[in-house]
Amino acid sequence: MDTRYNQLADVLCGFSTRLKKGERVLIDAYDIPDAFVVALIRAARSCGAVPMVQIQRARVGREMNLHGTEEQFALVRDMELARMKKMHAYIAVRGSDNIFEASDVPTEKAKLAGKVLRPVIDWRVNKTKWVVLRWPTSAMAQQAKMSSEAFEDFYFRVCTLDYARMIPGMAALKKRMDRADKVHIKGKGTDLRFSIKKIGSVPCGGEYNIPDGEVFSAPVKDSVEGVIQYNCPTIYQGVSFDNIRLVFKKGKIVEATSNNTKRLNEILDTDPGARYIGEFAIGFNPHILNPMQDILFDEKIAGSFHFTPGKCYEMADNGNNSSVHWDMVCIQRPEYGGGEIVFDGEVIRKDGMFIPKDLQKLNPAYLLGKTR
Image (cartoon, rainbow, N blue to C red; front, side, top):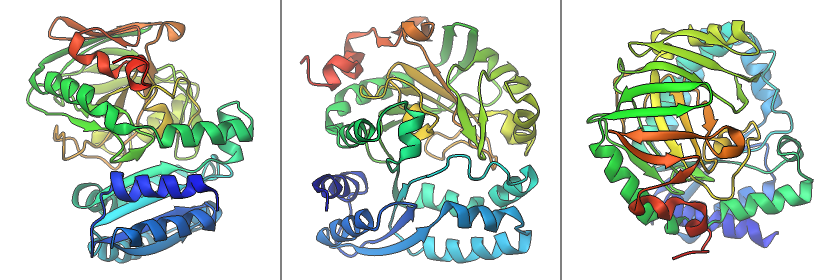
């Protein structure tokens, strides 16, 4: 077994989910090597936890959704929710040989599945300790425009980063976000204003996602005004989108365009909450610099932020409810057009670099150990 498997499994069980003796953990394995599932089982047992395993395959999941009925999805929901309620922790590792496997699942089927199965996700997110990560595949290497070997090395370097080094900077950013009211984001094609007053914020340094590196909050639901031009391509429900541009009035998306404007608006019309924002997050993982159409990586890009149509998290609750949660990413480093994030008149980050002294420990030089 690749020794890096054991190292990563130890991070997931020991640091991310902090498994303890007697706790039950569901290992949700999507198209990943059996050897890594075995490594996770062993790591969980070494913590004294009780591992349960679910093996999933993307092609099988596509077939189940392609002609799925509400009765079928409800049965799956009831079974999965009953199991999830018995778990203390959840570890999902998701591989993909074809990121477009679900591209031909009809929109109405994807919406129905998302709506009916939402209680399972809500319980898992709000009631268990959880972590989700991707698995390196040839498809991901192609998305990243890297050789398979180079991408695998990159993947394990990112996923086994010393996340504890993020703690001081994240604490400082959380403190600023918790006391902030007005946020102004400026950049190429973007002029956005909103409030995060009394919403609160959550630092993410390896506990919920691997790779990680963000602090998230949410805008006051009806406070968003202006326009945002995202510069990262994104995949949602198996469909690729690029050049997404959203216009807001009183918090609501009133205009949405992209390279696939029709499908974009179909998704945003899933339910009323899909046209409001459920998350605002600032990303700072120093190893992740360019988009690869994999949101668990892209939303952590150094110098990025994401502004998410759909459901909010209970941990930073703005009251928005939806079966959609679509993380869309904008990078503000100079090579991507630059930009600023301003809290109550103070520039917090400019062209991807944090400016206030208390936040400079989130800049790449510190996180990579090059400065103190």
